Amino acid sequence: MTDYTTVSIPKELGDRVEDTIEGTSFSSTSDLVRFLLRSIVIQHQRRGELTEAEFDEITEQLADLGYLD
Image (cartoon, one colour):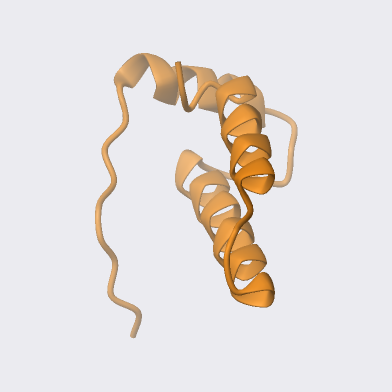
């Protein structure tokens, strides 16, 4: 059995995410967040650490998705 934790995001952002994932393979906001976090963690583990450029790219991608203002 997998244990879970809760991550809170503003309702407006949650609504934007729901609009964004409509018609995709992601069935929920949680699915998308898990995918994004896994991607970041895997990238970090493969390289040992993220470069500043990689961090900036991830930050930009998250902003484009509405996760960051």
